Length: 190
Image (tube, rainbow, N blue to C red; front, side, top):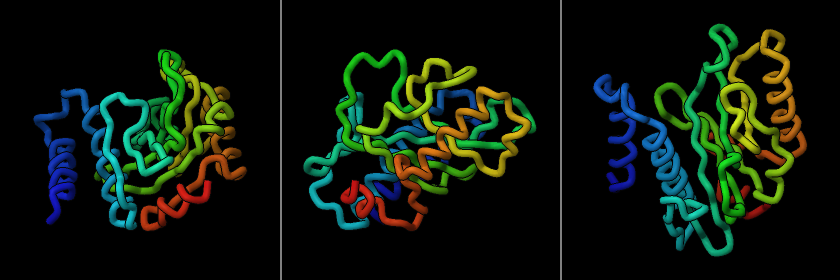
């Protein structure tokens, strides 16, 4: 088994470990997302992929393509009973530097930390994405996707957030890629 797959497997074990429930898991989830994208792009034949991470403005680079990986697990943070969703902060209010990536790849993980889907967003389109709501008010541009949710029971501000994201998917500004689809093909198209 290649080293990157071993690391991915270990990170999933850490995230599932009861002894690790009290740690800040967001860093581990973010790193897992970066490794999942690196492994997928290499598997798809992406040569010369440079892995940067660590606050460089983007996580991966292949020539002129600079990718900022965003990773989300299923959430139920609005109110119990509203259903689960994925949410990504593309740009936060506190971000001082300009966007230096060319693409965002949003990774949607299921409850077992397996990839459910990907969404590819060109950084030139990010200003069309909704600002955060509720406890995510510090998000300047964000993206949410529901998983079997009933929008009718959501508060109005959240309902609008989901509707804007859905329109962006329909308009091709956030491109859905199935877990078995080709990220490399999409990256090379936009």
